[in-house]
Image 1 (tube, helix red, strand yellow):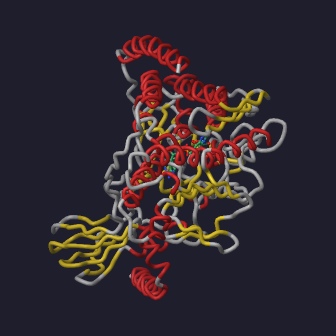
Image 2 (tube, helix red, strand yellow; image 1 turned 180 degrees about the vertical axis):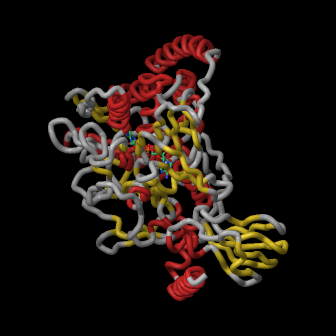
Image 3 (cartoon, helix red, strand yellow; image 1 turned 135 degrees about the vertical axis):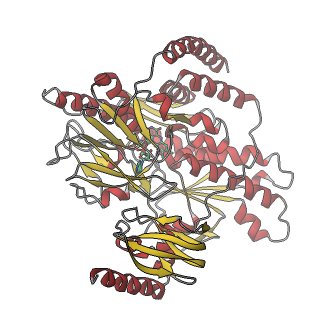
Length: 565
Ligand SMILES: Cc1cc2nc3c(=O)[nH]c(=O)nc-3n(C[C@H](O)[C@H](O)[C@H](O)COP(=O)(O)OP(=O)(O)OC[C@H]3O[C@@H](n4cnc5c(N)ncnc54)[C@H](O)[C@@H]3O)c2cc1C
């Protein structure tokens, strides 16, 4: 308690200094980026640790000599190491994210998704989100920092029923779901099996993120259960599944055993040598076929490189990561670089650098230095960081840490974990807020509010007025449309080639072929359509082979008809 108070006082002092610095910084004029300028342009794809820190170091090292463009689907940077704490609410949702614009005042941010890269033309194609027009950004240097994704493909039932844990949205969804099932269980007195299912929480994956998630989840449900008169804490079951014979395989075995003992003491049931094979809406199905009844299954594995990488002609490992040289340059592709979780970076002394934020930040520095060296015609240098250590939080005032070869566990490791990550958070204001939140968390009961965040519903209806374009020739093929009423015409190279009416569908050619739109569709009579985004279309056509066949047949006929014109 005294230590935390000291930490808060230090943070307040530092916060005041930071306030003064921030004020002085604000009066400096922002650099206006001139697209017509002759400065070399560095385009960075990805707003995570690797991308944001590359831009940060480039701003420092290259100043106004380069134009920096960063493309990220979101305008914020997520501080992953503290994400598990969002489950328990021990820190606020807004405290694990930082606005990229404020972190990178000299970088031009495009809040868009990269759809493709044309290495020959040296351009990156982005889609705008509000419309499917392709936007091409030319580059002199390209930095690939797309990270990894949780990939449940091939795992039966996981895409439908398991919670991934990679992003802020995942953490929020899980927290809301956990509160929802507790609410449900509190009044479920008729069906004991359903009650047991609601009160069983399963996490698959005993690596760092799985262990941190299960520890937070366990602390949270046990702390809040006291506020539900209808739940006896003894009914709660929190299970960790791990496919190997001990959790935290990345750590020294004594620390992993400490973590196992502590979690078990706190009520987590650890099932070693147990693989998650499938999931249903009511159970986690284990490798031996046993069904573990649960309404809450979280899986932190498997993680795989970003799917965009699979569509690019780049040197790749069998697992799909981009092969890079020790300088982080992509071999045989001048001016193309890759780093972070999406790349296979050789570690100094052999092996591969682990996919951690700690390494991504150091790689970002090397990469920025190497871009500047290339511009100055100086030799580049290899990535030489060996890692400072590893730390894993175990919930309530406990952690394990291996720093500079020294092993720590329990409170001291936890205090080190909190101090290190507090100081790593971008911005003094945020550090201060988190320090205060942590202090209040020691004395106040956990927050129980369930936030109703309405997610995107996938398939939606849209309305078009006569003269309005649905999409334009050359746009990204990201949706399929079904005409519910009204009419439209299909125009290719200025000529009308077809008319679309009630019951017709269109847009399938570009979606099926992963290509750009080969014609423009323009509404001629007030029209209502059903819109199937690419993902939903893939799910539907993947499950109904006849439907897919019919779409493919129509797409083939339409392609032949266009070809014969
Ligand atoms: C729960 C959790 C806890 C963790 N704890 C720790 C820890 O304690 N210590 C540690 O060192 N590491 C930790 N890590 C690992 C660490 O977060 C990753 O190694 C790090 O985030 C990798 O950085 P990155 O930039 O390569 O990828 P990411 O941070 O994943 O960033 C990738 C970025 O690319 C963007 N992107 C993807 N596709 C596109 C596209 N098509 N167009 C444009 N942008 C795109 C994404 O939106 C994202 O912004 C943790 C990870 C998780 C999930």
